[in-house]
Length: 360
Image 1 (cartoon, helix red, strand yellow):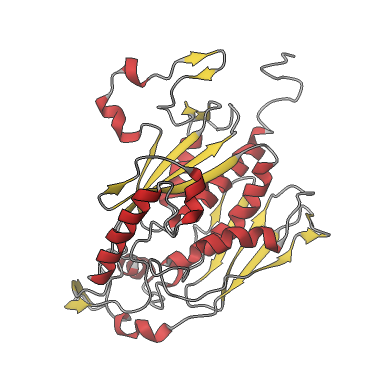
Image 2 (tube, rainbow, N blue to C red; image 1 turned 30 degrees about the horizontal axis):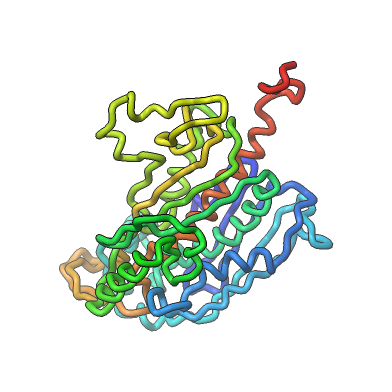
């Protein structure tokens, strides 16, 4: 199966299925000498882990990471770093009833059409369970970026009709929703519980910000920074839309309103979301992701079976009523992977003797 490797210099390959023995990642291209440990990676995995509240999947996984290679005496060696996370709480019998039918809105149908075969146990490779490997790899990328002063923060902006009215980063880890607005978090939880009680699901809007990214990261013209970030974010399960800075609101603006005035101390606004011409401009990178409602719901839905005959499907198992909640650390990880790759690629973009602030 192609499409399992991401990045050009900082390269990540993930492997494993939702109900397989384990999932993992191989990170190649990480510079030698970076301080790394299982505990450091575990911090990010714990934020993504299921079963932490009644608002997410009740699958009980410790998601403990094992470093198999590439680390010696607490530092990266320059060799590929192999990471392994074992599955502990699979209940494949929950999916026996759907092995011959397709869930509407899910990848069941398209995987079957592509390969003529599918792993129906929790969705196999198409499951959001695969993202545990991305978060593990992303923790390494995040550590690399911290040495360059880059800090990545994600949070929920909207669930259903409820949007935040303020951003207080101290609140993000004070609720189960990664929400920076304490009052909005209460209303969001009500919306999620309401959908959950009706055996339904609800969509969400996630925002990710990268602070400290210097101007100059990006590769024109077909490998722009925003193009790479968009591809990375859309690769996350359930993401159906991505925007930068002012995003789709730019259709309402005039050029005089949308242009970000540049001063000796920086930009006065950030409608561009920190990227101009596909290259970072030194301002904060601001990316938003629209995530659809979880497609696996316990409401009878019209579908077809593998023979193309009409059928009805009702999905059992343990699923997130709002997949956007646990997408926050996943989006942070994908942002980190993209930026780590472009940081290393930027080192190759010019002769060391040439620098825009120092001349030749």
